[in-house]
Image (cartoon, rainbow, N blue to C red; front, side, top):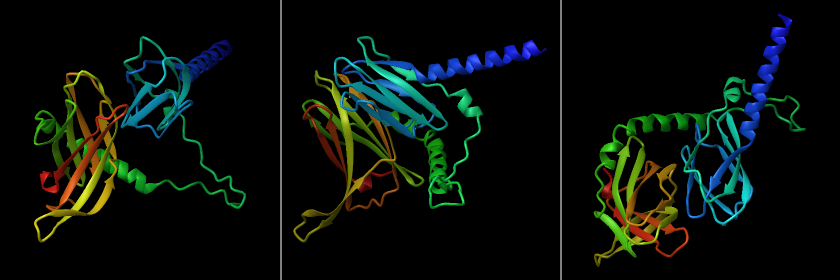
Length: 285
């Protein structure tokens, strides 16, 4: 019986050691001009990279897009997603990984969270830090709204309206399909059509809410501009030639009126084909 217990202990230690080693060393192959998608079990709380000048990262929801900016090299990458943490090694290769799915860490999910204590020299009571109740409630509220939006958005995603409000630059079209208000969240759906012979790599997308007033001469002028930051966004960063991609942005509720306009500016990562369009606030459904 004693030998059996000893054997079980040794096997358990070997399994935990192998799992920890696999978690520590995970190779991800990437290629210049190609975005590798890393799928996390939960939206990452922290993403760090060793050499940010040679590798570009962009995260949205549970997804992280990785693209190298050099033709050779490697670097370390650390991801913290909920109770899981991952150590990756990014290396440039001619055969990149299309998608890398990170599995939840079984040991991290089973082990109880460590107690949080204060290490400040002025605090002699060692009281643990209080949880951010507002952040947790906001995440729960967003999940509840997204669960309802999943039953509504497919109807909009199946029917693109690419030329209602659109702009064209060098055979690349950015179109605003829908602005939909679901409870207290605004969903903006766009389509980017690349009719050129060159891939279009999206650097970032900016939004501005413009309040306008009409003068006596029937000319409108902008009285106020507000930068809008989406709380969640999802789109494919690289649009291949002769193809298109859908883009989804989620905002907190905005005060759109008949006198306000939404400006959308899509900036190319390495190029000058920037796309800017405006749509009236009355376009919100």
